[in-house]
Structures are given as structure tokens and as C-alpha cells.
Length: 473
Picture (cartoon, rainbow, N blue to C red):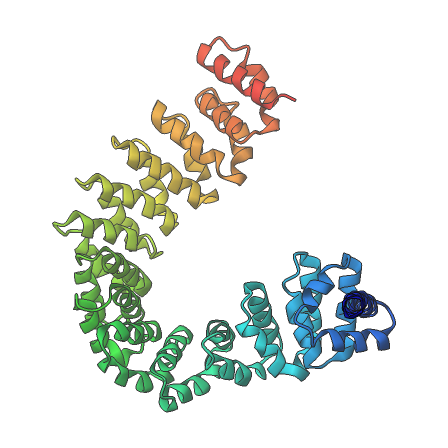
């Protein structure tokens, strides 16, 4: 008897469990139907209930696109922390239309629920974090205090930094408060890094005492001071630039800061660092001099006469970022440097200068015996673009290699086609003008190619036939 009773109880227990599971499944499906439905009262009540469940995102994901989009309407109607929680989670949706709709919803309800919105800054999913950053930026300065609070959380610090950096100077007082009052050294160093990114000189006095930290931590301080580029720190920055004991990346940032400061002492230190044994620092010194603009030309001119070819090459690179007529003179002279890397860098830099004075220098360089210089000159002329077209068209009648390079340059200049069509009718420039037009896939050149295909010149016929094969429908 006891055995039958035990069996009966077992069957009843199993049935109860199965019944409960079925009922829960029915209740969950009903809840999801209401959460994705059109009855607003039912929807908000269902979404409130779902927000308490860990699996609410997966449950909503089981619904088709229109249903998932309707959830955003319910979230907006809720306009509370639970609605924000759901909207943030939906930023993980694989469909960009859903993500965009919930970003819009967050921007509408986030202002009244900024603390909940800020929670997205520490979410483990990058799409959620990035979305929270976008929303907080869109909601304006009211987001700053919440971003500062989240900055103190290691999980939210990176995303909070993006928000604070966007608001720039308005975030500085709060970050300075962290630097001055918090005991967590890592937090304070991250605040210093954020202040450096903002670049506000009000931060300098608070940052300077941290130079006493060990070298592995001091790199954050030096990088921040380099980014801020306050003239009061010139001596500190020069000392750091010249010290091989400091972190190379920090020294590189210092070099950029000294370029922004641009005093004679700063520029002389940068010139000296063009020969630094650390290539990251040496290249950054060139960029620092470039950042100083025309003030750096005398120092770069001196560097261009260095016995060290690496220094001369960096001088050429730096000159290429200074749009001043004097740079054309120095770079033109460097086209004849004994070191191939230097003269090729000079030809490349002339295109970056982009001044009209560089055009005749580069046209002559198309005939340079160093093919690398000639090719770089053609690329630079293409970079200068429309102002170089007439000179390049004339070069189509030059010696073979120079004419071909001129054609290659013209093929890359969108505005050159009318001049090329005219040049293709001139016997002196026809061959290479057609080559350029073929390179451009110019349908307007087909009649000219048909005419050239009947020419007595075998080279012209060959080019024309090839072009017709390429361009004909």
C-alpha cells in the first residue's frame, strides 16, 4: 500500500511541476505579447514586470522587428528608470533600425532619468556604452555631474571620459576636484589624463606635483602636460624630451606640446631631438616642428644641412606640413640630396605643401634620374590638383618617362578631362593624353581613340586599340 501511495505522490509531483512550467510559459508569452502590443496601459505594465527579470532582453529578442520597435513606444510612455534599463539593453539588438529607435527613445526620456542613463556607461557591451555616450552628450551639460560620478567607477571610467572630453572646459572643475581630493592614485591619474585630453591650462598647477611619481606613472603626467602645452611648463617639457629615462610615448607627446609652445628654446630642443635614438621620439620631434609652422623653418633649414640623413629626411617631412613659400625653396634643394630617402621624402613633401611655387619644381622633378623622386613628384602634382593641370599638359610632350608620369598625374585629377581632350588633338601631346584618358575610363575619348586607331604611328595605334577594348560597351 505504501508503495502505491509513493507512486501516486510522485506522479502528482511531476504533474504539478509540468503544470507549473506550462502555466509559467503561458504567462510569460502573454507578458511578452502585452509588452510588444499596442495597448499602452498593458504594455507599460508588462514592460515594468519584464524589467525585473534577468532574461527580458532575450525574451524581447524572440519577437519580430515591428514588435521590437513597438517596445520603444512603451519605453517612452514609461519614462522612468525601468524604461531606461530596457532601452539601454535594446541597444544590443542586431538590427540597426532597432538600435536607432531606442537611441531616439533614450534621448527623449534620458533627461528626466540621467542617473539611470549613466548606468549604460559601465555596461559590458560596447554598443550600449557607445549609445549611452551619444545620449548623454545629446542631453547637454546636465550630463556632466553624472559622468563625473561614473568616472569614479573603474567600469564606467573610459566611457565617462568620452562624455567629459566632449564638454571640454566645462568638465574641468569636476576633474580637478577628483585630482585634489580623492585618495585613489589610479583614479587621480586617469583624471589627469582626461584633463590632458581636454587641454585646459587651469589644470597645470594641480598636475605639476605629480611629477614626483615614479617614471611608469609619471608618463601620464608628462603626456597630459604635453597635451596642455602651457608655456609655463616649457622647462619641464624640454627636460623630459631630452631624458632617455622617461617613457618614449610620453616624450613624443611632450614634443608635440613643445611645438605648440613654439618658443626658440622649445624649437631648438625639438631640432636636437630629430636625432634621438628612439625613433618614436625623433619622428614626434619632426611633427612638433611642423606644428610650430613658419616659426620652425629656420630650425628645419639647419636640420636639412645635417650630416645625419635621418635628420634631413625628418626635416623634409616636417617642412611638408608647413604651407609657406620658404619651404618650397628648401625642399627643392633637397631633391638633390645624396641620400635617396631624403630626396624622395622632399618630392613627397612638396605635394603636401601644395603651393603654386612647388609646381615648376615638381615638373622638373619628373625628369629626375632617381625614379622614386620622379614618381613621388607625379603623385605630388596630382595632390596639388587643378592648379597643376596646365603645366602637366605641357609635360605630356616631354621625354617619354616624364610624359608618362605627367599622364598618370593628370589621370588622377578630376578637373583635367577637358584639357586632356584638347591635348589629345595635338600631335605633340596626343599619345600621353590618350593614355591619361584611358586611365580615367573617359567615354568622351572614344571618338579620338577611333581616329588614333587608324594612325600611321604603330605606338599610337596600339594604345588606341587597347583603349577601345577597355572603353567600348
